[in-house]
Length: 259
Image: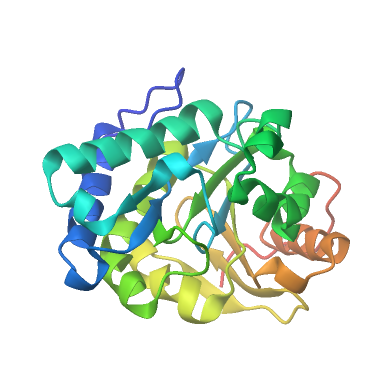
């Protein structure tokens, strides 16, 4: 696999874009989704990212209005290109929260995504680990309901194969040393583990559920942070990475190098 990432503009490769277009075509092929308003996500890389940490969420929960589309709009090549272009532009130029912090005009426009994300504990936890500018941020499922909430079981199954390929490309092209999946294991990360070659081991933590190793990354799989105490969550994640031999700053712990 040959990556063609543009390091200056933080673009993903042409291969990545092709798989993303394929995903949109798959969504449009499902008759139950043709009149549904959906939103798409393109991964975000902070301007100071040097491979320190990738964070993986489940899917976006209300996102930029520019990224919304009806399922049938992805049924033509031109429609798919427009959706992908809009979604990519948001992540690579504007890109709240990784590319920038909230602005006053966000409040003035009353974008629902802004309030949703500002409330989210996951942002506070992520910032406590390495800081947003040093993050690479992605989601397991790239397509979600525009009105918020997780993708349905049908929508998750439909996009699983393509999203696995997209995450594999993200890891290959951006090469994070550590990956934190803030998704929970059951019915989320476990769907992707085999396809990504993650060798998982149970972890008996309050928030961390599993540790994982691949040829290139150390994985920590933690519960969704909706009801978490942010400081304890971040502390346990740091401890888990230390046990994998990939400590974050100010981390301590026993090193586990293989399972």
